[in-house]
Image 1: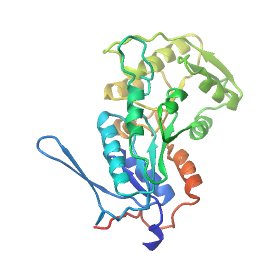
Image 2 (image 1 turned 90 degrees about the vertical axis):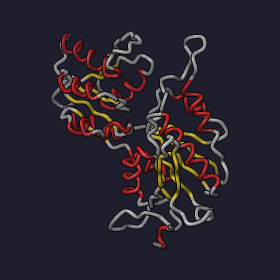
Image 3 (image 1 turned 45 degrees about the vertical axis):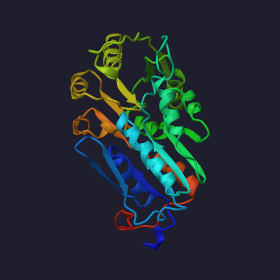
Image 4 (image 1 turned 120 degrees about the vertical axis):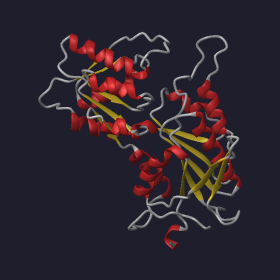
Amino acid sequence: MSNYLNLPLIVHTKRSKYFADLLAEKLRYPILPVIRKQFSDGELYYKFTIQNKTSLIGKDVLIVCSMVDDQELLELIRLGLELSELGTRRRVFVIPYLLYQTMNRASLPGEVVTCKSTVRMLSSISTCGLGNLYLLLDLHTSGIIHYFEKTQAMELYAQKPLYNAIAKEVDFQNEDVVFGTTDLGRPKWVETYSNLFGVGIVLCRAPRELNENSPEIMKEPIGESENYLRHGATKVTCVISHFAVTKESIIQRLEQSPIDKIIITNSHVNSQLPVVKLCKKIIIVDVSCVFVEQIVSIYGSVGPKTSSPFVFALD
């Protein structure tokens, strides 16, 4: 146990345990459990499993949160604030998915730029000791990183694990492949992959309308796959950084769609839904390695080998 005392600790929000477990397995850092209770009036109670207020002084903590809803956001802020109060040396926030990314600017008078206000709330967490570091993944637009104030933040990229998955699932040797996108806002992303594989690129315009009955983000991939096939394509494979699907009916539509394969990452909590894991078309790519690489560059090494994950608790 003594080998673990100087290692960073891992804390996670309630819904992000799956990602924290992956980090703990690869980094061999101990997990600091959080006791959670809900009172009859709806109020929430949190407690770190430590014996006294000095237990965490001088320690570094990784705080893991796939921020998919307001509850995860609030829990992250509460845990981060308390860890600062408890004297931790540095707090590294591992955020594979950031809520409200697409609401990063106001198009109409009076619209709230929810992404910016969310980031400002994160920036308000005390930066005592060596401060806070926010690690985010494949942001909707690179400008979001500049919303952070008086703290460190950096965007990481799922390019390497996605590249490996594409190379494995797509037969570039025997098939004529091009990369396409309906997102004209960031065609450079698609161009990056087309350059890596040495193939062409196709850009398609897909007007977006706000419709509460629209099947969320899957409207474009399903519709455009039908258009591609109608115009001569023989096969369509979708690659999605953040699988922010919230309805099982959408997964059913994907199963029935002409899409051949759907390569996604595990950045979003809903990538862990049984219906997603059971979908034969969906290939889930683990991107925890992207964060592991950056964290190891900060701390220089992983923890000692052990037969089972070590849980840090002083109670």
